[in-house]
Image 1 (cartoon, rainbow, N blue to C red):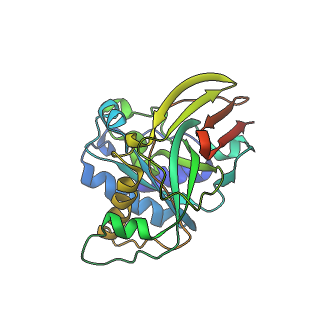
Image 2: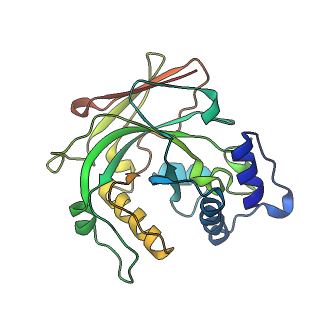
Image 3: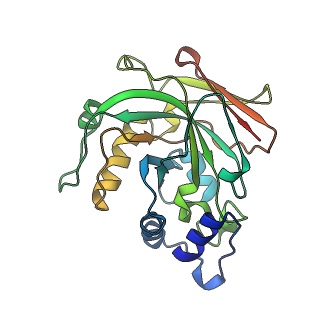
Length: 253
């Protein structure tokens, strides 16, 4: 399975999994996520969390959040125009809060606390996570955990402005409005990401820890969608208004 996904991602074409490889065993899915990262051997820029929202987990029938990697060369500044070379089947737009870390979180036996995660943050960033998967069916038609197997559906990240003085911001209550081609689509709040983006960040650090992966200073962690899915097409422009945190925009060529 890992070789099929990796080949599809490298060669930029869709993949159909044979019935014998389709799984809804969550432990097996997590093993595929880790093995795919090893197989692709791409330099990492951070981590991302899919399905941090309970609404998304219900929609996809997932038992928990879906982790993935952010890779170097897939992080862009707001206003970027992204070509088709980044995507295979989808351009899924999700509004999120991300953190860049200023401290290392090495592998250790005891879990990291939320206070430790908070202390390790360098800056806060409003972002658009862009999702894609080699599978034609995003949801795996309920016979397998489609996008979760392929890096949690992560393809790229578009950054807004970096915020150093974020500590007094009510992140759980902070909202954003998503627009597609200037038309309002939907709104969300930070609490959609596991109740609070810091809770989501702590979960990601500990997931990596329990799977033998360190999370390093300088890496980004995108904490999960606050607005759910919004699928775009070539020629579309998506933007998110994060209020006092600014806007983030991306165009698709």
